[in-house]
Image (cartoon, rainbow, N blue to C red; front, side, top):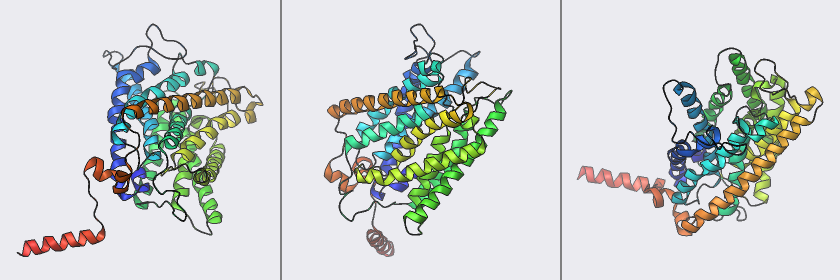
Length: 402
């Protein structure tokens, strides 16, 4: 709903379809090999990639744990892919996107294993990322940046005096609300249970997640008020709230509420500053995926190295704490290394994958097809103007009377 609300009407169905195939093709590849490359435990598993658990299945004894973690991680994998769909909306070939959606699982699953897998080398170094700031949002944001640059801006997007307008503010806002509350599932669910002390961390995560988003929303409103002459603009509010949610994911269960508020506020401000910067660079991102996910995730991982407190119940902080808690730069160094490694991996592999796909199917639709709209060209969905609708209604009425 968020993405379809941000693109033009003639491409709204197309971007919805891309979200569907993210689960269809991305879900297929994650079941086939993605989960196994992140969390397999068979012979050959090493600090870079895991082996085993392909075509996920298990016995009754183990199915509770394995299937629960599988479905949860599948939602993360599909999220990392669907971040890209909005950034390249209105000009990316649907068939090429289907191939990308299937293969992008490979780009996501290795960083997920590095950070969360028992074998992962970043996990061994002590990286802290509770709910996917780096493997989900940085991977998705970096991939979106590369894909957007490669496919180029929409026709006429940066023509003089032409501004990008939201097609359906209502859809965009409703999509934001759904994501907003859905984030509680991601962040609270990342404790993987409510037994023992886990419920305490899950409840704390709920508070920090909401408090961060409040800080992000408040900052966006203030920024928009002063930046746009007392106007409260929807894109700034939406992206500010979502960016705050991205930033808090890394350490959501280990922040105090005031820290979460500050982290969300700073992330919102950084995102609002980066939105016009993309326009200056003529990088066309219709939904703001790059400012929200790429910028928000970078700040979110750094914030862990600054604010995180050491926990004693579940050892989720791995014995480390942020600079403001412990005056130790080790955690900040590990978080920064993770950003560099995962960011570089995402950029290089996305570029390579899209270049290969482009040899098979052009990434970009034809100019005339882009002008007509992907809905009719690729899905046979015809949109009528208000005049055409009135003419159709009049004709239908005459036929009925006859």
